[in-house]
Image 1 (cartoon, rainbow, N blue to C red):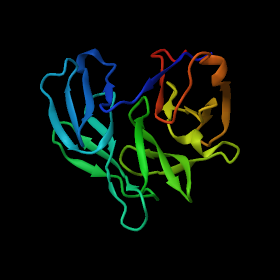
Image 2 (cartoon, rainbow, N blue to C red):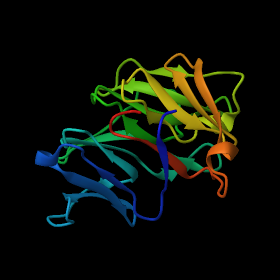
Image 3 (cartoon, rainbow, N blue to C red):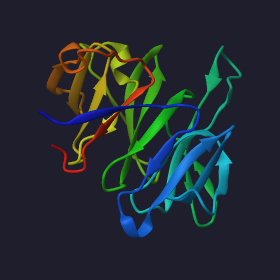
Length: 204
């Protein structure tokens, strides 16, 4: 069985690099995104936004913008990428929704997965890091809630997600590869929609 740990996002979200030579963290403070050394020094404000995820090479931060929707109740959220060195922010505009959040980098940094609201239901979206090649990852047999906390498998060809009751490994076409009952894993705990998965470094 894949070893998975569950981390809960609090007011400050951290994302750490695995490359010891380039170790940095990206975090959210107030309504802004910052990047700093792994020990918290040399903090630099990058942009306004939420839920940052730093790329494996430490050069880019994916996050979601936050604002009030103009044509419907609720928030308007877009996926954006910031260049750490220059501070330049690029909002990915070729995504067919104004409610996308919690981006996660693929292991090789070539793609980003995120939750996306479309047709009044949640699903997953995957897009190339340059903003091209968007596609939905859907499965009509799964609850909409299953698409709220994606995490990439180490091979970059599938993802893990959960619907509070079950944990799934799905491929990029939405097909379920494996399924685990969370009640058998978390015998004395439970999940909520803000709980996120973390795959062990060796993927096992």
